[in-house]
Image (cartoon, rainbow, N blue to C red; front, side):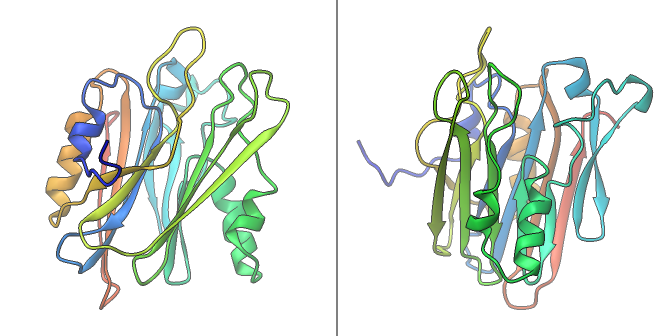
Length: 237
């Protein structure tokens, strides 16, 4: 086994009907840009009734058709927020918890130790989080149930240097499942980054399952100038 093997996002997603929600963080091969991508998928009508909308400091999830929104719990949140020169990206309202802790000088680890997996048993969907610093280095975390009953939370933290061309991919589920969706296992997956934001956006979007994909957000930040370039795709236009 080559533990340093790097696969493209297309290869990581190929044939996977339901990886759930996913975070990708890394640095472009030319070493010039910090890159972040976040996507959501859904199987239920409520989950699929969503779009990403742009905010001044990132994005927010919203109901595509508010009249069809059954329960905003775990559905509506602020997945991407700027934090100083860095960027927070998560799959839930822990984004705000992290932002608040950082704003008062505390660590993101301390923030995530106050949170746990989602209360949607028997799946106990993990809370996945990432934060990228102004120099391109980044941290990732997954909070997941320690047992099938959801009686305790296991917390995992990862820290990565900025390496040109390398990124890491963390998603909520291994694959689709019935009645229980299997929780992501192991370390974040090593992925090949792409210099061109449009090529990277298209690679991810086209590789996601056509029936279950909902929205994708990609953001490239110039490490020298701080200039930001973003792409946003909503299946529900």
